[in-house]
Image (cartoon, rainbow, N blue to C red):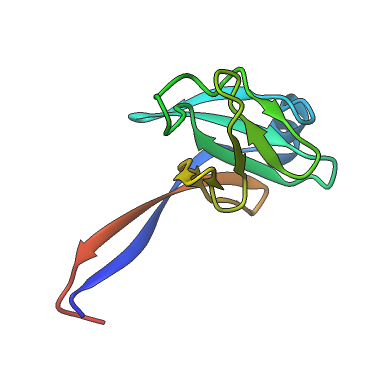
Length: 119
C-alpha cells in the first residue's frame, strides 16, 4: 500500500526533568506548538499526556478540563470524559499526541499520512 503513517517529532523541552516539574499533577497546562494548540497534564507515575485544546463535541476549550484519577480528562462544558491514552470517549475522539523522552529531551509527536512508493 503506498500510504503510510509517520510521526514527526517536535522537541518541546531540552530538559525533560525540569519541564515535568512545571506541569502540575493532574492539572492542565496549555502549550502551543506550531499550528497546534494543545494541553499537557502529568500523573503521579510521571506519565505526561498531550491532547488537543478543543473538545470534539462542540469545539470548546479543554484547557479548563478536570483530570480524573483513571487517566481521563473531562470536558468542563458538557462533562464528556476522554481517555488520555487513545482519546476515546462518548462516541467521539479527542485528538491525543504521543510524548517521548529521549536524551533528557521531551518531544511531542504529530501523526501524518504520507504517500510513498517505498516501504
